[in-house]
Image (cartoon, rainbow, N blue to C red; front, side):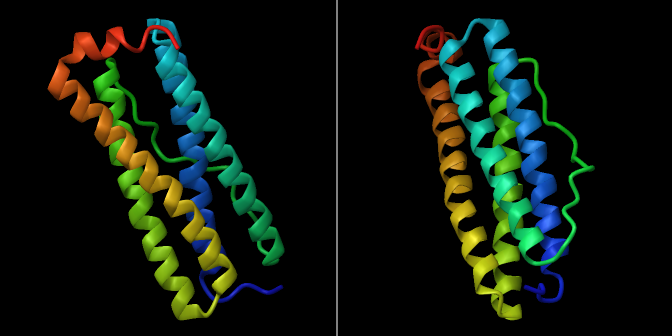
Length: 156
């Protein structure tokens, strides 16, 4: 099936963001494991797996639209030396991702590509859940303090 105008370029932007998220979440999982926070390590590993699934689905969809997936480029990886810095970097990343997905959905509606729109709508649900999770963690830290929060992250 031939892609509508601009859809493959849009999907390649989303692929770049999703692949960047995979790398970012794998790094953050490794950092949390190294710091001894098993629960956070497990959560970040789960996020990385979700992003791999999104990337795979997007690549399949680009091929379905007779496009060429661009898997060679990544955006900058958000990094921090503390758990709180990781959360802030990830929250910023997810907010940017949500905005990109919203713009993509709008473009697909205008172009009449309802299959791609549906794919992006499915992805934005996960993105908004991620935003909520990071906001909740940061709120918990502000309410109970960093030390108490982190003490709960040591074991599953």
